[in-house]
Length: 401
Image 1 (tube, rainbow, N blue to C red):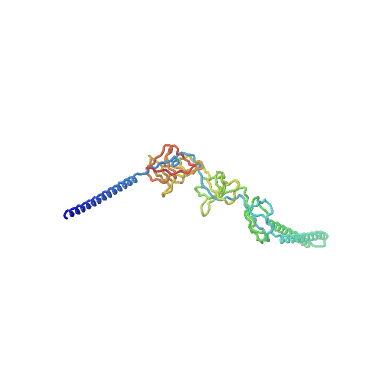
Image 2 (spheres, one colour):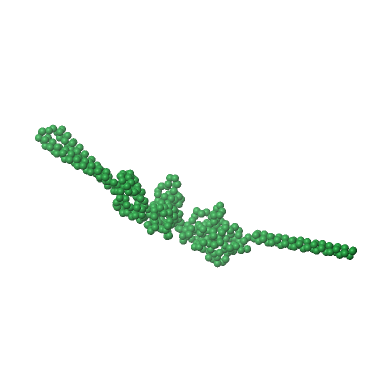
């Protein structure tokens, strides 16, 4: 009996020992896992504290170079034909014989429409008869006056009667001249019933229809001559100060694939009352596809400048002031820049720089925003091929640790 108790007690102690051993192993395993997690977290924190090193490609870089820049002023406006006209009714009446429609060509002097001339014809006939009647009265008064001159010489009438007949002749002649003038007015009124084109061009708008009764000065057709164009642009006084007649301009016309060369034709001597802008007029040659009212934008070339410059596209604007990213001793530096001095080089907008020396490597905007002080790795080939102008979209740099 005692042997059995001792065996049971032995088994209990053995189970307790195994349980304690299992608990100890579990605790040791948990402690080891936690230590591994701490090591991993510490390594990650250490890695985060290390600044990234950016590897820049050739298309991410551009060098500050001395370039011959063309200076100019940006302009925009709408095309306007050199000649346009509105055909209006010069007399009231019913509109007839209007056949031209939008887009059709017309010639100078061509009859475009008529106003019902029934009343005008009647007025002409009336004026003609009044002129004939007045001329007959002149003939009668002249014969009477001639007879009175003979009778005065013979002593049959007094000189007063002769003066009276002379006055009657003068009155008859004046009445005749008035009747002739009235006939001219009536004939002009008849001519005003015929509407003719004042220029060679095309119909831009048809504003009335046959059968309508139109009043004096009612618009019938709008005509446009597409043989020449100009653009009216508004410039600030500062921009207009360097603009002169005869300067060239390069304009992009809405809908046309190729730019169009233009010339400064004239400059308004007065500023606009409200905006204080100066109006400048650019002359363009007629080009197939041009239409009045098309939007135009471009640039007037005002001079040349030799200066240090980089592409305007390298300027970043994600800070309160525009800035450039440039490299110094393998680190990125930021430099705020003013945008008031700009030019063009081979058709690309350029920014004139005063604060960076020639040869400085500048990051293009496509490289992305990089924190100041970040280390940058530049391949020798990339540094050697940095150029002032870009023909392709720059790609961003890759990051290594």
